[in-house]
Amino acid sequence: MKTLAIDLDSVLADTMVLWAEEFNKRKKTSIVKDDIVSWELSETFNIPVKEISQIFTDIWQLRWDEIPPTEPDISYTTKVLHQNGYRISILTKRFRPSVANVAKWLDLYDVYCDDLLFIYDDRPKGEYPFDILVDDAPVNLMHIRTPRKGILYNQPWNRDFIWPTRISKLIQLTNLI
Ligand SMILES: [Mg+2]
Image (spheres, rainbow, N blue to C red):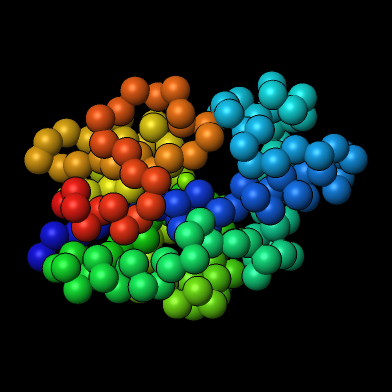
């Protein structure tokens, strides 16, 4: 059975929607997710990297149940992908304190998965066992070589990255893999 690895933040969980909201609250600004067109959040919004991660940590810690899914039907779609013969592996790099709430979030949205892998260090995702990886971060896909597949999930910050296989909706995977 082939393994389909799916990233969590910005592929299943639309974390940056709430990140932007929390940022606005703290900075009295009015940015939205679509304004985040680069990875250099620190430069774009003129805030220290530490503060960027702090907002991440805080929303997963304190407002995890307000983080919306990227798509309304992630439960159905993950089940369909599994029924199509894939092991679903959720592969997410994050700080240790958010782990419990991530598990709760996946239950809240009834996301199907066969395993859940938390990466705490800088081990590249490409070193984990999967046949296909869906991720919004080009850096996680760059070193994946055939026959393995890297599929980019469209987000405003990866628009300019040249990559052959992109999707806007997870259900599109059923035609690609
Ligand atoms: Mg991500």
